[in-house]
Length: 311
Length: 252
Image (cartoon, rainbow over all chains, first blue to last red; front, side, top):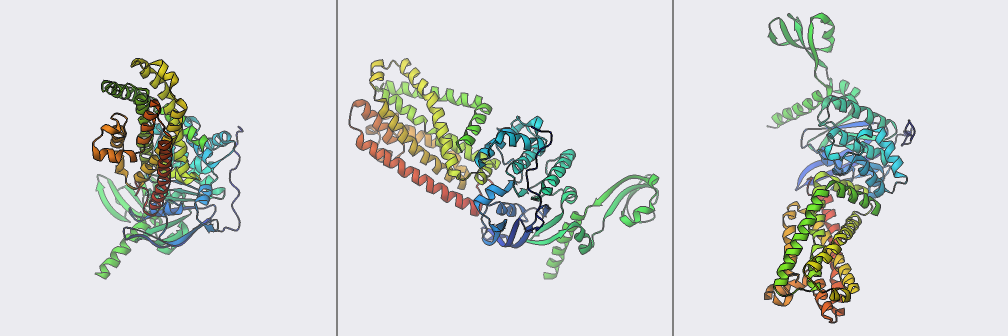
């Protein structure tokens, strides 16, 4: 096999028709609405984060988008046609929350060969070797998944998406269980995947990871999508302000002092004030909270306020 | 689909080889032990041994397929298979076919070893209507495939059903005539017995060895197997539709 893998996807369409379009989607379990009047569209080349608190309906939405659940109301179209088993089989790849979603007693190579055979992919051995190299699975190719890390199993899922040339990759709980190098690797692989004209929908609770990778975020709350916005739009629309936290030498003279210990003071301040700190005074500096954390907190406090008003 | 399932089967065989060897050893001990008891009761015949071997095939739907579906639903592999296979039900049927071939590969030497150990007459072995036995085996396997789909359907809806599948194996052992001939079963049980998927096959084997006419019974067996297969197919599709509405059993 050559040193450079061949591109497996067509280039992103300039037309940018949505790959998946959802209209008026609703789903209930035992009369409890989990999703209600959900509308969304996923476009080629973008990575979209689906956020929400536990129980918000993220996993249900992912299952609906890949045909593992049937909606009660509304419609889902994939590449302009109603979502059906055959279109999902050809164009959608999914890795579910907290599950390997693959055969654990089989190696990455065996899993990929198995699905290649189910999909009727010709010259599967070469295609499997190529996608495994692309996803950095070379050394672990023949180890049963049971002995591999969660991150590596996720990469096998991505390799399956590459193998079937899925236009839509749904990754539920994208970052849980990944250490920092694995997150960086996953970020780079997903970006590369999306660049080839596919769309990636991620759910997750690691806001730093989501913020670093998503072009757009959707927030599910109370069974509806309450935010659908790019990160840039979020900052301006919701007036989000990045804050920092630092341990500094002496009294900072600005920001909110949180605590003191000896000559050091822990202080929280806005980005605009950062320039007032001389670098030699800073002992430790970190982001207080990311944009998405603020966004989710905003959603929650808006609900609390509404509840108070309603009594 | 066959290629995919063969890949899965070889991987399974390699990974779980110790478990499979243990299961094989258990099968040998159980079959040998029960056959010894049967000989003590006075029936040291080829069809009595063949009946026990036939009963072992019931472990395909009741142990292996049920364990597969339970495990794969837990890991999400079943859903992944569902999303990639054109006909998920065919995947299960092909898998049961592969298991049946594997079963046959070790059933033949087991049969011969036990026949030798219990000193069954070689002349009877040579003169046995093996083709008839093969036909009965195939028809019985058809019915067991239906049972496998039925078990799969139940597990997709109610995961805890796995707790009862091995008990069903023993119901089949004791109520299908494999150990106790139908005529000696208590009345109510004898009335239920012919409806079980192994009974007609086992009874046909006995009549075959005795030189009786089995055509009517084999016809009944064929009818029963086809009905069981159809019921299994319908039940599996219904369970899948239900899973798609409410979520697959393990993941809701």
